[in-house]
Image (cartoon, rainbow, N blue to C red; front, side, top):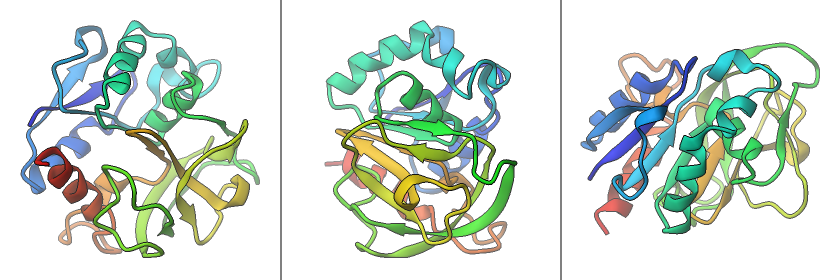
Length: 212
């Protein structure tokens, strides 16, 4: 198994993702965006952070990069792709996932642990959860309000809607691609995750999926 953790200028969650992958026994490697090539990796993660300093809109500049255009080839070939927080923003800006992530309502940066509900198990990242299962993960964003642009497939929903997202949506999927605003990579280690390991099943799901 080879999992790429795609890194842009301003990405800061890449090594947290690698650590989460390591905890479940998946080799992960940080891949600088200019070095990314399709057809090499079994899965791709776009980690959180502030790519290009959130210029224009969060994720907008990274979405126009050659790396994201190349990522479409992997998506078309069924490679699982996960976008976390800024990664989710990049995927919506690129049109790989539907909708947009708008400034929070009420405005401001929100950083806290929150409960989220799993509402769709039929993805490479969620099938080991129970449908309706509520888990805790942290959020840290100022532009996380999900706004649909047509039909969408919700996978996670906020129990406590911290940013004004439409219908409490915290994560959406299209095909093998999942984007979510909460950080599952920060909720895997019971020694440092004060609200438990709500993100662990996401990584375990990916491992089992990749093993067939």
